[in-house]
Image (tube, rainbow, N blue to C red; front, side, top):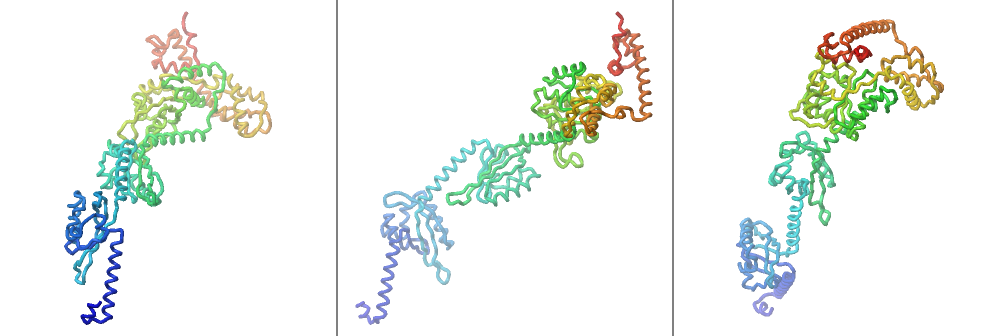
Length: 606
């Protein structure tokens, strides 16, 4: 002050200068007290000034703190990189950040984050650089630990048989485990650097899966997607993808984990179950003949003995009999007593399906195989895999379908309509018909080789007129059944009605009996069951005349066969047999003998 005053300076100027010096000292004290490193550099990047904290922490001398002397405290492995990055920022004249390890006065290296900002003059030239160093050792250790844990996690996930993809918070893939790579044939680079989903997702599922995935990621909650994925062998298989979010300690979403499980076998089972349910609903809608086999006649007992013997095997069974005799009931009894009883029983009425659709119904079809085939559909044989398929009215199958059925019986494999791959099936076949297949074979309407494949174990069901003694039991059973449904109590059966039932020939067999009893129960108003006699008579004279004509023709045919048997002394086959004398196949003659009730033993000589 004295010196300034002596130099002629005014007291006001001296006071201002003193305040400036005091403010500079105060700022210097603050800068030296700040726990962070603060420093400045010249425009060329060399150090100009370091605060006191820098010197205390590093142990640098004042001389080393100038220019480029600070390099001695940088970790040797980081020095070249740090200088290269620092000079790049100097040349770019832009703010930036650097990371490096700096040696403490005791020799320990710790990580620091260096932030740099340029000071520019009015001409946009760099006057100096301002910088600060912040200790980030704890953060770097945490990152290193996280990296090690991530590596360990990858080793673990590579050992998991499920496919796993790790994604960032926006859903971009970061990593795929070995199971994912093995399943799809992709590389990690394929998963991380490209839209790999477009190459492995089924085209029909791609858009749907993309929308579901977008919506699920936006919600930030766990979600699932089912879609078909291309396996490396070229086969599309159904996969269940589960997406689970991962949050850090602050609750921020940082990762998504997507796991994939092959569910193709389950989806196929669901398709089979769906088809089985369709068949079950059809059975529920269609009133079955009756739930139990009712009767005690000798003819029925013989059938049940055959059922009990063939049921435990896997042999193909051909059930023969007139319409309404209960062929499906016998087929179900065989299935229920077999080792396949806990699997599906699939019924197909071959006569009720148009010829153009029977192959698709039995064997399934691929998408686009014909007009209206909008998706792949499993056939009844695939639905019955492991169980039993009942081919009712098999005699009505078209010729081309007979060939396909023969292949199934021989090779145990099918080929869907419009497909090129064979599908193995494990199905027991039970067929039924009211036709004379022997005559159909002779007339060329049914394949002989298919007949022999189906006729492994034939079971002939007697007509109701052949088991008259069972009528009383059947009537009682059916009355109880329909009375319970109608909410009625019927305690007695009219004697005349029962006489009518025993005298009637029942051309519609048990189905006709069922219908008559149901109608009578509906009309009944008391506790006694009876029917109108008119219900059990032929309806028109024309039908009666036709019946008489048919009876006359049958009698004439019977006489001709009996005469041939008499000449052949009761023999049917062979050169001297009745079949040869009549010029018809042996099977045809035997069928007619049974149908006409001829006892050929009467014509045998002693």
